[in-house]
Length: 333
Image (cartoon, rainbow, N blue to C red; front, side, top):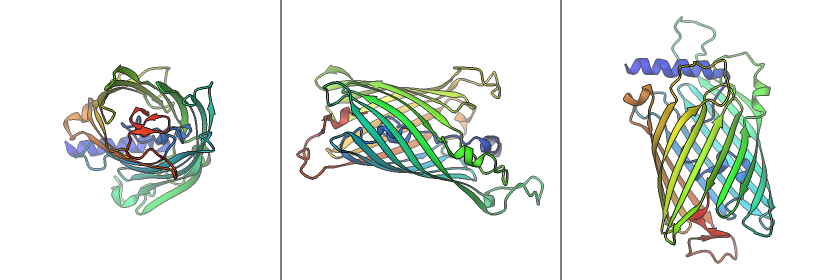
């Protein structure tokens, strides 16, 4: 049965090779910079973060993702700058990206905490395939590489992010440029071509009492060709240090897509997320996904770890407190 699952993964990869999907990220609420360049500088502080995700543990060739990012605000909070590096692997395919983010952050009204940001990311993308991990059905098939092959292309992302002390909303598009550079290259149909992805996010911070807050968050993700994905999350924040919650992920039908089966199941996954401030400057996150599809009986779930470090600016008086530049750091989205 495991061999059958491996075949399913490979066939899925081959079918999607001309429309590579972005990596799944469960902790997007802690790592907004990975899906929206306008998020750069939102936390005000200098902030370095990273995450590692192992999906469908126990299945050989299942997706794995690693990313590192850093960002900060400058010019009195009016400009956000960031750097994002990601490495995604699924089976024999790999995607390595690097972006430099710029966000122009406009104050809305008299409140310093209300900002409307427009962000742009420019960078490079390397897409590859390791032929040593492939077995051709017909030995000597010229379409199946026997060594590693890759292609490099410029890419760009764009986003808008609006935030206040109590809620936020964002919209973004990724993989805008690379597909137009690579789509005419038919040298190897197994090397993936990135597909533009569109994200819509929104969330709120609701006070229950002085020690307890509630954070509801939603994410809508679409790549035009595949199923539209909806994440619904809910978090409880206790004592300004510990957040824990659950999420549910499902596909939704927003508009007709001719290339999709009509009987695809809508349920995808559910799981839990936890975030803890070990110190005023160090946050740690973990999430677990349990699949609700046909793979649920053949893997040990998906695990995602994240860590973030706030770097106090010169002259800052925030050390020793859980406060950020415009509110508690733990209140940030």
